[in-house]
Length: 497
Image (cartoon, rainbow, N blue to C red; front, side, top):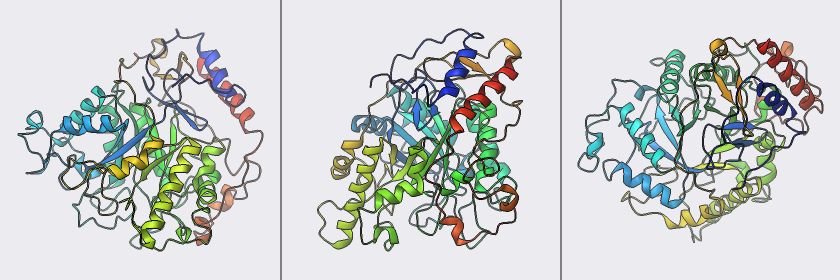
């Protein structure tokens, strides 16, 4: 894919930052292959270190989130065979799902979960060491990895519990979740194959606990997913500021778990290290759960594009941040003649069209056949490919990456500040991670035009059904790009001084 220049007017703040930084540090050589180096979130795009737009078409690989605490299918075939097959099919990224309780140096894969005659290099390894091997194998094949905290406690199908929607439980308090992200971010510091972290899977309401919400700071703690995600992002960025931070949306009365980004407009998430935030959503068809009202709208499937635009697509359309479809999947009954099968195919085709139109990145759910909801790319023999699924995915596959190369940049000599690289073949920008002064987000209810939920009122505002249905305004404040540029320059000049 040819290099793409960022529009100067829209991203004036980034351009000014780069001009100031160039006087302090030498230029970094541009990457030679698409996807090289660490990635950045600018506007609604993800860029590599050379400023080229990167798109990923990946696959979810479960198992580290199950009772075996290791990638699924290693009892049937060799790790290298699976990775070769993924690359040959055109998948350029793996969303590697894990459970909180599987992340410990002492945890080992359960007995029988690996056939060591097919995987002799894995014999005697801990769960984390097998994860290392997966990442090393992906690196050799040009496949990137996003680490995803799928659940707190593991289970094996068909006994998957109804997840409670929280990133903690009685046996695993939030501190364990944060410690795990500290461990993983530290472990893969400098490993460019790991491009980001998906902080937690599908936070949602459940009768077993108070409502999980996306609120202003200090509201509905500890069930405020926005502030919890900020705490986890702070932990990751303190030890590994190069990683993209993927944050999933909420649930709602009219959407799937993880797909509601409406509250983001009113209460945006701001990270300490900029240009690293990507929002993530999940979407499925009627065969996962029949009867969803938006899938039975009289205008279906023509209603879906507007529905997705209003629910989460606006975040990318208005260049608030990139949006990644972290999960979409289906059993894909190609050729089925029953009404449900036909409705499923209409949903698949509609979302595929939307992905293509918006040029979105995505990861299919899932690689192995043992998902009770969707099946897998592979059939029950863990070898044969479901060709019908690949035919559907073909039109939205993105280019492959080269093997991830290069060493992590050294620490900048001046004040020992970590170098955080920006796009457009840019020099490093020296920005202290732990000591950066707090900055009030520009796009927040207390100072943004057209947002009718001031923080002072929100602290007393009860959670109601309308919270999960309210739509963001159709336009952002027109002064926001200029204000962002001015604020960024003042902050950088203060740091340099």
